[in-house]
Image (cartoon, rainbow, N blue to C red; front, side, top):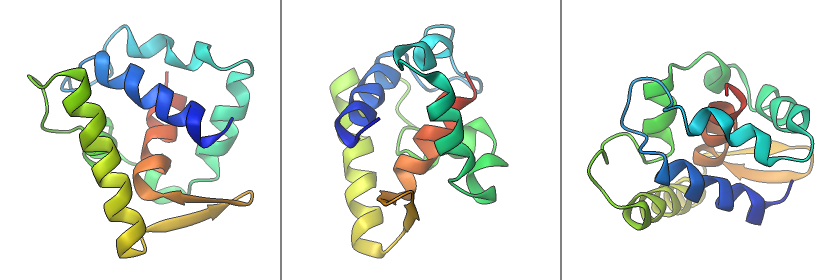
Length: 115
């Protein structure tokens, strides 16, 4: 998995209308997009206890998607990208397997790994 793939999944998640307390049915199949879904779960596990123990609503908020129920997919993707940039600027990052990941990216991985 690379960063481009992760952002593609963010777009798919945005289309799935993330406002629900639990991931919508369409989001539940997002992990199937990976050739090896276990890689996503392993990456999510390494994102740390802060993310793995978080509620779905908390993860959605950390992705920048928590308050966008009526927003378009593009607006939701823009919110994720903005949150990601803000995380890097503020130093909210994790070093995982050689990747420097924003907290928004870690939250997204954890959210998708739950599917």
